[in-house]
Length: 303
Image (cartoon, rainbow, N blue to C red; front, side, top):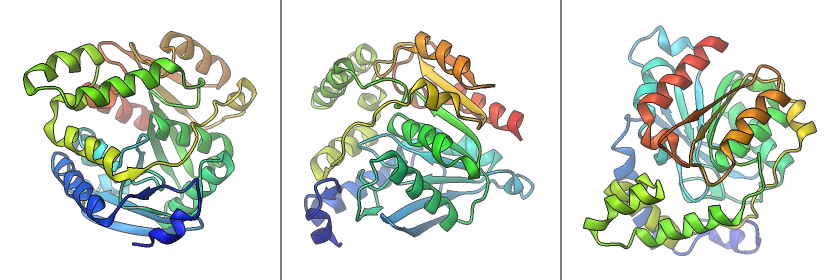
């Protein structure tokens, strides 16, 4: 693995050792096994490194002709986090799940992509490398910022953008980082306490053993090296023309849900915003069936 080049740049993520990387990959594979089975994996070369992509396909040949879905995961994770969503989405459309360079996963980062213009260039090059000219882009958390940024800066390949409790709408506050820290500590709690902590923290990671192991190993194995993204301004949001669907958890600690559910449709013409009750930052995980249904309905309405 080309780690030497990564270590010379402070804004490039890396694994601490090959052994920890391999342990993390084993944990990821256990999480992938909970979802749909990928029909193929592909490495796409970009100006910023190698992007690893998982491809899923519907059994129905007619469904394979529909506009594909591209999934962009959250920070500190990889595309295995989409395991609750890949079965339903790939039953209706082709699906591509991307490992973002700079986060733990099978992509290899060689240059920083955290600047908005670089992030948009990286994602556009990845879609071009996959031969995709029109996609429904779906992003969660940090992946939501990447999706929102793409709709703002390089929307040419986007049929739509779906944001799942995304970054990019507000400055990341202390309450969110406190929740992340508390959630990480809770992964070390005794097994009997984890369901109660999961309910209190709105953290489904704690009650899925495979996911809990993957998250813990990712923190140990990989060093993320990038600043938190800055939110888009009102003027930047107002310039977006891509059909946009915003899904927020009612008890999200990343954004103020009611505020953004009112703000985004006011600024982006035709944008749709909905709040999912009984969830925080992970509506696509702990309310997967409902969110899958809503996303597919939105994509069909766009098509």
